[in-house]
Image (cartoon, rainbow, N blue to C red; front, side):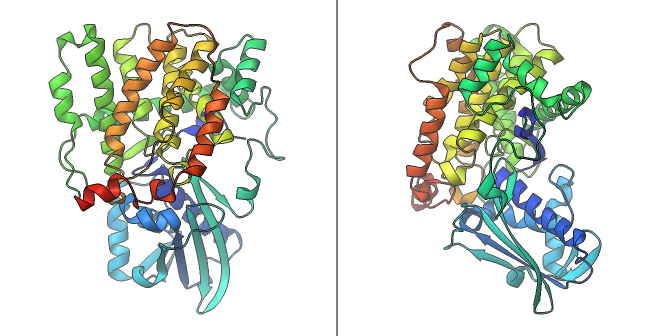
Length: 456
């Protein structure tokens, strides 16, 4: 059962689909080997990366993530300071500590195979892990990183749905915006109250609150680090961290009375988070790493510049954002490799606009409308990272989306009538647009800015 808080995962940058997903897949493969009693038998592991993972994996840290996962590390708990050095050591000594318990030979050049010309048929982000004893294959498995840090295998990707036969039965099931808002209206509940009630099927109320607050606190910590730490981002583009300098210029006594400057600061907060993401630091997928700054940027704006903010309101904000994210996860995609950046930045902007509208006492109609407007004007957004790095245009794009989400929330609060375009219509259109979009513009770095800036 997918819940609202499942749309957020605490992990490491720079990409949910290219870093966190592959890391989880590698760890899952190791755990499968343990479960079958094969871990102590094998003496070689082979990893194959396909499609978008192969084309932009180097810039996204995919290879680093896979090897850390094979060593038994999880994205939420891995130490960012050892994330790169662990792989440097593997390359140097040609040995891998599988699952943290058994050392095997591993040749980075021969055992980690990159297939840039081949896309697996079931998803653009495909992986294949093979375990051997000498030349005999012991166990093999395909995985797919389907966006937001979620992974699937050959069986589950064919049966992806909001609920499965083994799931808990929730009191208010929904897959569409129409179902969600109808349930809210019928039961006289806000979006946050409804998804909170669904979470209670598998968690205690205190667990839901604590999980939400942990997400919120991690977001705010990443904002604080992002506006403090200076220097250049890793990866070779020599991109300077802009957020600290921008924050110093904008943060002054007059800011509280200037909505214009507040929105600029929201942009800076979002930029800071994505600069942290690009630095392999700890962030929250929201709903992906590439869009990790948008919601925290709006959240920090809300905490600093709106009134009557408390923990209850912050939890409502996160739960509302998560509920809207679920609609895209159910009805379309949040994977840039599948639908372009509209599936990352567009969805994050939609989530943030709805969440802010909700905590500013917006009606159900206004919350619905804010989410719809944000995606309606994100349709067709391409994913074309320069050098395969989650830096240009990704970082600044988060800042722009944060500012837009605030404007959209303020706009939605001025009217309380349904529009001509429904949120379900725009989600359906987003998916269709993604399918029609050229592969070159879906996280392959084969088109757009990724090509033209280099050529210039």
